[in-house]
Length: 94
Image (cartoon, rainbow, N blue to C red; front, side):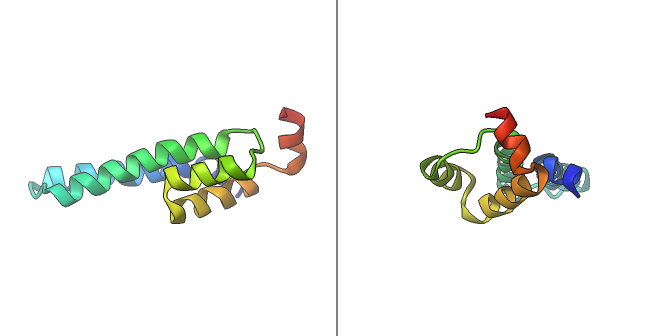
């Protein structure tokens, strides 16, 4: 589970790509699919950066990340980061 938590952002990006590719091949592309795919790809990229950033961060930086990642995805990425790295690993990096 620890290794999976490190790659949750990539998984979200792949889901976003699926939202873009499947309607394209079915010939039913519309703006809703494009917007959802774009949001998921960007959220996955930013989430991957957040989860794999080894700096502990302050309360202000966590609030900024929550605003950037939107609230619900931030909670998912926050708990994935806690699962992926132990406190000792984060302290060793800082």
